[in-house]
Amino acid sequence: MENPIILDGRKVAQDVKDRLKPRVEYLKKKGIHPCLATILVGNNPSSATYVRMKGNACERLGIRSKRIHLPEETSTEELLHVIHELNEDHSVHGILLQHPVPAHIDERAAFEAIHIDKDVDGVTSIGFGQTAFQFGRYPSCTPAAIIQILDYYQLPIEGKYAVVVGRSPILGKPVSMMLLNRNATVTTCHSKTKNLPEIVRQADMVVAAVGKPNFIKGEWIKDGAVVLDAGYNEGNIGDADYETCRPRSSAITPVPGGVGPVTISMLLKHTVDAAEAKLAGQTRHVSNA
Ligand code: NAP
Image (cartoon, rainbow, N blue to C red; front, top):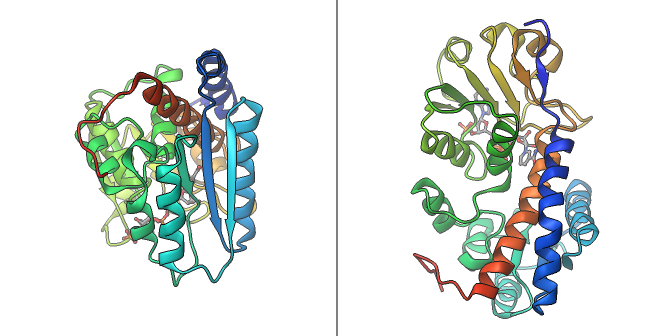
């Protein structure tokens, strides 16, 4: 394609944040100060950076950020105790446990301990199930960001053939469900998929969620396909090979400045949604309380 649309994640994120500002102000007037609690366990420098970025993004928008940093040697029980306290804390509307936690901790148990009403990062199995059933309030933030980008640029989803490369619980699986719910026909690929390039070549829309730098090659991309690269690898490198995929695509997300900034804005949106739900005293369809 001559001039693919470069899907500008910073612009999309700014649009989301601009629309959140009056909602935050309204909540504050009503006596509710939206608050996201972030939990960082250990000293992984990338995780520390991600948590700091999320906390700072909250504060720039007037959302309170309660930052909890636990030592590397924290046990699963100790982490669960902290999460239970945050579940009970009425001033906290969303809880984010930064992935990955140190290997000795049962991460799944910790995610599942987050109350569904505060699962603004979409990490619980109930949250995933609700997303798959199309009534989830807070889908995982990166899949939500991918849909947000498609909608912002008015790129149609219905009837398209989408190939998602990756099936992690926070990214590949939920984005597959969300695209399916929007009437795409979806194939989800993984490390045991045979003939991956052949499958990707059929796709109108490719989601790269592999965790391997420059993994998706331009020669796999059908002319005019939309490429959504969720990958973020050391050195600001995506999972799709931007230089070779861009000329084949009709639209593509760059790395950095594509899916990443929108992911953070979706976390802010979900936190504001959760604070509003608190104000409205809403109850959920399903509760894990
Ligand atoms: P993950 O948990 O490591 O999952 C990677 C997935 O890729 C797995 O399902 C794996 O298959 C699949 N895979 C690995 N090698 C493959 C191969 N050779 N062929 C086909 N599939 C293969 O990673 P993740 O947490 O989903 O993250 C994926 C990427 O997104 C990473 O680059 C990460 O940094 C990025 N990410 C970005 C954001 C953001 O805000 N932009 C947020 C989260 C993650 P199996 O299931 O068979 O192992």
